[in-house]
Amino acid sequence: MEELNELRKAVVSVSQDFYQNGLVRNTGTGGNISARDPDSGLIAVTPSQVRYDTMEPEDIVVINLDGDVIESREDLIPTSESPTHRLIYQEFSQFHAVVHSHSIFATVLGSLFDSIPAMHTEFAAFIGDSVPVAKYAQPGTKKMARVIVEKLRETPAMVLRNHGTVSVAENPKTALDRALAVEDTANMYYHARALGNPKVISPEQCRKLDEG
Image 1: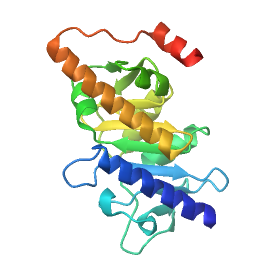
Image 2: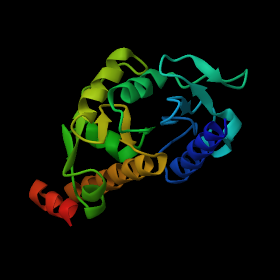
Image 3: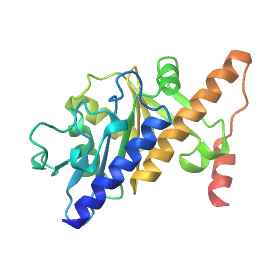
Image 4: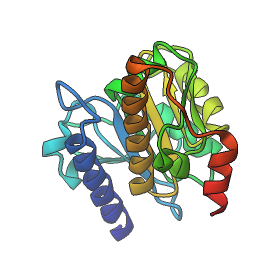
């Protein structure tokens, strides 16, 4: 299907930006990305243990909402956290892309606080006045998927304690933009807290930005 080929290319393109913008560390394989075809419902998801900087469209695994592999190279399997992606798509018909990162500053703040506030107008525009931090859950489990989904009912991005961020959107690029906005504002907030008590953008100010 031509639609699936385009979806795979979109996931790879976002994966390369994901890597180049520092949302993945060390092995070059942490986190995962997916996109859903609105018509067929099929999901293109990054494979397990393939570096983002060398990933090709043919490496992307195609699965359905039940987790069945529809198309894949013989030597590759979908990310172990694909159940989380599938549950997100089952619960939110409006979202067709998921980006899960192991970004440093969001993870650091997620170990200290219960939310990360808006430090920058870009964050406010892409997400809102804050992102919630969810309690720790074992990676790859149904419990982790449920914890993430519950937080995403509040906002299109969240932090999973001691793990990383999850952002969702109508398309892969916007989901990546949200992931970057979370990490950028977490970076700013971390450094501002080191200097003092930073001023943040209030919920009312965020609403005015949204209205404008």
